[in-house]
Length: 443
Image (cartoon, rainbow, N blue to C red; front, side, top):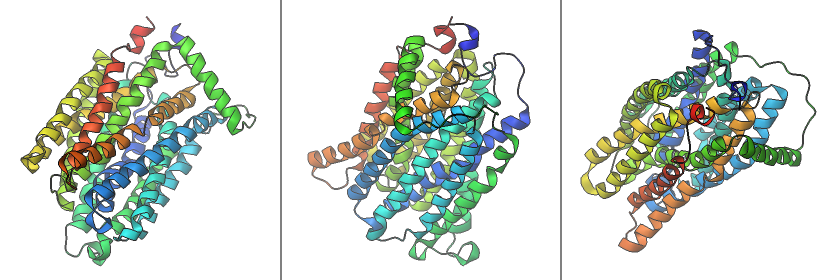
C-alpha cells in the first residue's frame, strides 16, 4: 500500500497550529467529569453505596447496566461514524453530543439516596456513557485536523494527559467546594445526598463551558451534499467496510479485534476501580476522591510521557508493556485485598500509570493506519469492535463476584471481580502479539 493510503493524517512535516491542538485537547479536559467524576470516582460510588442496597447487589446491578450500555453503543457507533464521514459534519455532531452529555449530567441531580432510585441512576449513567462513547467517535476522527503522522503519538498523549489533569481540578473543586465541608458552597450539605447531586450540576456547567474552545477553533470540512442512507443500508456499508479492511489492511483488522478486548479491560479498571476502593478497601467518599485526584496526576503525567515514547518505539510496544503491567498489578490487588488501604493506594496508583498510555497508544495506532477520508468510519468501527465485546468486563466482574460468593459463602466478595477484568486484559494481550505497528505493516 502506498504512503497516501496509510491514513487520514498528513504525512508532511507541516505541523498544525498549537492553538488548534490546544482547542482539540480542551474537549478531553471539558468532558473529563463524565469519566472521572460521574462514571468512576463520585457518582458510581454514590449509586453503589449502602443507601441503594447491599454491596454485591449494587455492584452486580452496575455491571449489568454497563453491559447494556456497551451493547447499545456497538449498534449505534458505526452508523453515526459513517454519517459524519458522508456529511462532513463531525464538529456539529460532536457539539450536540457534548451538550447532551451535559444535560444528562444535570439530570443526575434527581437521583436521591434511596433503593427506589437505583435504576433511575444507573439508567441515566448508562445513557450518558452511551452518548459519551459515540461522541468519542467524532472527537477521535478530528485528530487528523491537529496532528501529522510524525507527532500523532504526542498529540494523542497530550489530549489524554490534559483530560486527566482536568479530572484532578474537577475532583478538587467538588471535594473542597461541596463534599468535604459540613456546609459547602451555596449552603450545600450532605443531607439527602445533596453534596453529590449538586456536584452533578457543576459537572454539567463544566462540560458546556470548557468545550467552547473546541467548537470555536475547529470547523467541519465542506463536502458535497450526501444522499441520506437508512439504518439497514448503513449496516450493509459497515459489513462492506469490514470486508474491505480485511482484504486491504489485515493488520489493522487484527488490531481492532485485539483492542476490542484490551480496551474493554481498560474500561473495566476505571469503571469498577473506585467501587472496589470504597467497598472492598473501605475508602470513604472523600478518600475515593483524593485517590482519584492522585490517580489522575499519575495517569496524566505517565500518558504524556508515554506519548513521546510512542513516537520513538511505536504504539504496539507501549500497549504490550502497559497490558503486562496491568495484569500483574490486578492479580496483586486480588491476592492482597485484605492488606488494607495501603495496598490499593500502591497497586491502584501503579495501575493508573499504565491505563492512560495503553488508551492513548491505541488511538495513535489507529490514527496512523486509517485510510484517507475514512476517519469517522474507521473510528466508528473502533468504537463498535470495542463495544461488541463490552459485555465481557462487566459480565466477568459480576460473575467473578458471584463465584467468589459461592466459594466463600460471603456477601462481601467484590474483590473477586478484579479477576474477571484481568482475564479480559490477558486475552487482549495475547491477540496483540500478532499485530505489527502501522509503519512496519506497510513497509
